[in-house]
Image (tube, rainbow, N blue to C red):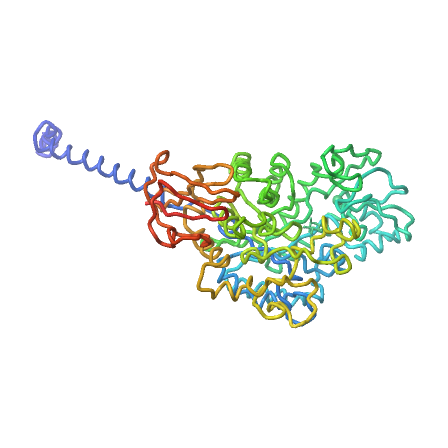
Length: 601
Ligand code: GLC
Ligand code: MG
């Protein structure tokens, strides 16, 4: 046996010795320690490491109605250069994405939603060069640009329609033509959806105005044209599309089918809501078209490890979750959830709002991202909807507090950050909106969308800083002397703009960006909830959207002792809930329209 062997044997036998036992113990305990350290690290990282979120999940989407945002050339109508001149405002506000309603070439019968060239900017708004500058300048400010895409219809002045009327190929079947008005299908804007062409001596289908003929999506050539439009804007470097009127893209080919009455109360047979739209809305074929645009748009996603340049697509729909959530498939990132647009009316009290929020979270398809909209160019402004409290307060701040602290992407309408209000005094003669005009002098006010489309209120000057013209396209709200950006920015007291900004900033905290959402005490006046992300600060949001005082004890049921006020609606009659003050949580008293965001210890 070689000495080597001997020593080898000796070594083997070493386990039995004390020295070896110590060594083994050392190795084992080292292993265990390492395991514990790794486990702790993993837990910590799990708690702290943000989930991968796309830019559109982290930003507020701010809707600009371009006619009304900023006029640069003195014609009383907003334009692209106007928007460019105001881009710094979004950095100030804390908004990282703007959605611009249509600026394409248009006869402006439906103010840009009737498009005569899908790849051209209307001279009223500026030029393609202006659009390029806007995108460039926005990107330089880390601001994403979402354009409106209106695929369902064109203008009747679009060359395609003019040629279609003349039966000029390949345009003959670009629209939906019939010899007779074949059924009772109704336009969303009221009346028959069948319009007569004196040129072609046939009827054509229009889901909206007669000047907005529906494109025929069963024609592959139309599909190509619209894909090309998406491609054009993708190449221009836009970040996303808001797809207009998605439910109406397809209609049944069986035009002998009449739509049955909806039996909804309060509608006349002139109105679209009077019918149940089995054959003209939400047809399954729509998904394929969305997928086609999505594929084209997402070709331009040039994200890399450091930069998220993903493209975004949201589709416009007003519908119950079972219908709207079907649009989460096939290419769309999300369908607008309009429940809060409707639910900010007084008849929807705090418990009702809670229900709407729960519906969004509970019906969301697996892995999809929630969203909430509180205002747009088609609905009464959020400040006007709920009226005022008996002591004269508006609900602007509590509604913005709700919208900006929910889990999901909020979409805000320009001016709602200031508490801009509907202008309800526009006469029939001065009314611009064709939807209002359709219903005549006695009923136009029930339908006109002009009240919520009045010019942005920048300052207290005679035209509110919106235009140099003495004739803005819609009248300014006279309250622009005290509801305007300049005043609300510089006031020594808390203003809606300041509240909005504070909320936008706070939204960047993990608790709000991706944290959990749990309702706390709620009744018919008060809503409260906690947002928290493990490893980060948690916040309690408590707001009174009702008409009666709420007194809430967060100590007894939840064991919250105290917290620090991080955002306040600032409209309290007392000093008790001042910003950054630490307050006891066993008895929070909120009057109607008051609200707080409280940092929990
Ligand atoms: C959408 C728009 C609306 C427009 C309609 C027709 O609903 O939001 O403003 O009138 O589509 O394009
Ligand atoms: Mg259609």
